[in-house]
Length: 199
Image (cartoon, rainbow, N blue to C red):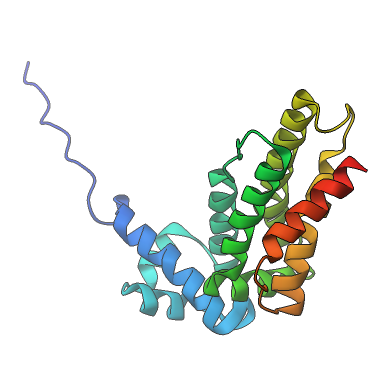
């Protein structure tokens, strides 16, 4: 009885090169920042990534599915939970990370645009919630839990309120009003948030 020939490795369309996938993902952020979701096209993404349109369509069926995939991947990365040993230190570290992300030139264009699109596309609204809110709520819960354990906050302190107090003013300043942060702003905001949480 003859043995069957060895199976060939898949080639062509069956193989999705990771470097091409990453180039497309990077191109999506650049395209979103440059033209916004409404004017973004698969053609423009492919051109920025240096690939053909078919390379994009092999991975995603539409620009909406592509953006949703990116938001889901972003959410999966999560925010690092600070562990500085004090409530003020943890709040200040959270503010530093958030300010860095919100001041990034791509994020500062993409986030407001996607929030507008979220009003028209429930799928984008759900993905933004998962990418931005759910992860930050988890980090805020850890910060509050550690502060309660150290005796800096009373038992029953509300992590959602903590997140509102910590990130809310920063988001307003950088995304809505779009004004630069003055010197010492993050220090002052951290102190104010901690005082409010303890009140």
